[in-house]
Length: 169
Image (tube, rainbow, N blue to C red; front, side):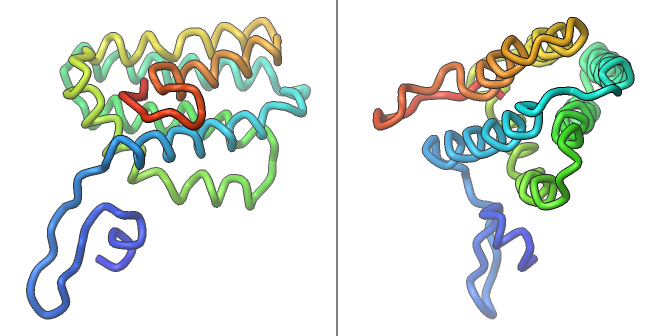
């Protein structure tokens, strides 16, 4: 319960009750921005000699995500989404980077679930939003990959310093 509280997913009133909190649009924007920054940092140094293996892993995770969407299984889509993005964060081999990224997994799952509903996005659309990332990895274009990651997380949010609307994830 304390872990969920520290992630901002529940509020605990001592010796009384706990309630599930609702993520504000500012919190959603912050979580998406943080994940974007970490994944961007992970791939900035390149994909290394394991690019083909990374592309295969991303493709497999995307296939699993697609199967979850066809089955209307939101949990499977969220789990596959996590696997997909974890592969990107593992590119750098930096343990602390991955630790920071992992700290937000519960928040990303909650955000993805609420974003789909709030924005009226189908599970198939959620899957399609990952294809640009896979394509950039497949061709080995780091600049294109960085743009695809940015668009994946931040499209729909206003420019920095302006009030936010909805995120894409």
